[in-house]
Image: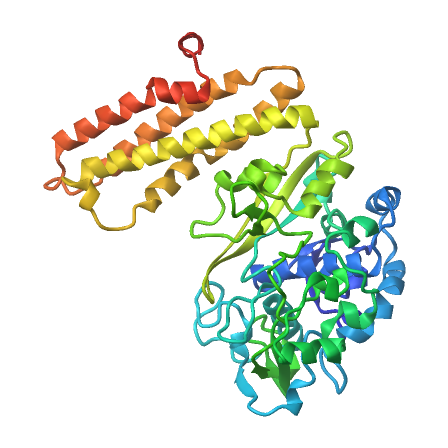
Length: 527
C-alpha cells in the first residue's frame, strides 16, 4: 500500500463515509468534511500527517498564495502532481524502504517480535478498545497505528525513545469558520490554515541541510539509521526541518500474513493480516537540548525568566481554562504558543474574513509509558491589536488567579466541614478543584468574549470583573452546599459545616478578593 496513491484515509464526505487518497482532500464534487478514523487519537495523527504532507510537498511561497488556495482550493489533480514525487517514501510494504520502518532491522540479531496490539499507545488499556481484543490489523489501520506511535511515542524502556516532542505531546491547530454556517466547513480549510509559508517554516530550526528525500524521511537514510544504532543524538542542524513531521524514534518493522480475515479495529475485510511486528532498541534519539521547535506544539517556561522551555503535555484532568492563555496568548508568563497559532495571529488575522477562529487542541494524558486518557477540545482564539492584547492578557490573568484562589478556598472549607482534623485527612481531593473549574468554564469564556468586545470598543472591562466576582460567589456556595450535604446523616457535623460556611462567605466578600478583582464597593453595589 502506498500512502500517497492508495485510498486509505477514512473520512466523512457530504455523501457519507468513505476512504480517500491524500490528494483527494479538495474534491469539489463530494467535499470532504472531516476525518473519520476508528479511534480519536488516529484522527489527531491524521491531521498532523496531512498538514505535514502539505508542508513538505507544497508550502505556500507567500501570504497571497496561501489566501488563494484557502479561497479557491487546488484541484485534486494539482495536489496529486505535488505529492507523487514523494510517493517512494510512503510505501508501507514491499522489499524496499518502508514508511516509518527500519529496513536495516532484519540484518541484526536479537530482534524482538511482539503482538500488533503493542503498536497502539494504549496497549492493554481500556480507553479505546477492550483488553486483548486487538490481534489483527488491516493495512490501513496498521499504517495509522504506526504513524500515531512514531509521532507520539511514550517512554518505552531503555533504548525505546520518546517522540521528538516527548511522550504524548499536546498538539494545537487553528480552526477557522469562514461563514456563519459551520456546515460548509471542510477538511481542507482545517489543514491549509496550519500550513506555514515556506520561509517561516524553514526558520523554525537552524539547519542548512538541503531538503533531499533522505534528509526529510529518515527511513530512507542508512546513515541516519546507523547513527541511531551507535547511540548518537540527532540535532536540528542534522536534518531538514520537514523531518519534524516524519520523525522516527522507534525501530520497527511490520510483519503481515497473506490471509483473508477482518480487522479487529475497524472491522474491514482484508487479505493482509498484520498480527505482529519486529522491534529493537536504539531508534533515532532526537536531542532535547536544545529543544526543537514544532509548528503544532506549545511550550511552557521551566525557569523564571523564560530562557528555557519544554513542550507542553497534558496532565490528569485534561483541559482546563487555566491553561488557555498559554495556548492562545503568545508570551503569557513567558510561555510560547504553537507557531501556527502565533503566525496566524501576527500574519493572517483579518477579522472581517473569518466568522470565528478557534484552537483545536488534543493529546494524551501520559504517565511514564502509559496513556491514562485522551483529551480533545476547542478553545476560542481572539485576534486583537497588540495594545489591546496586553490589557486583555492582564484581565485574563485576573480571572484565572481569582478563580484558582477561590477553588482552593472552597476545597479547604469543604475539608473543614468534613473532617475534625482536615490537615491529617488522607485521600485525593483534587476533584473538588476540577468541579469548581468545570462549573465556571462557560462563564470564563463568556467573560473573555465580553472583554474582547469591550476593550475593542474602548471600554474598561471592569463590568466583566464585577460579574465574574458574582459567579465565583454563586459557584463556591453551590458546590460547598452540594458536597457538605452528601455525607451520612450520622457523620455530618452541623457545627463544623456552619463554621466552614461562615469562613467561606467571609473570604468571598473579603477586601483581599475584591482588590484582586479591582472590584470597588461602589461598583459592587451598582451591580
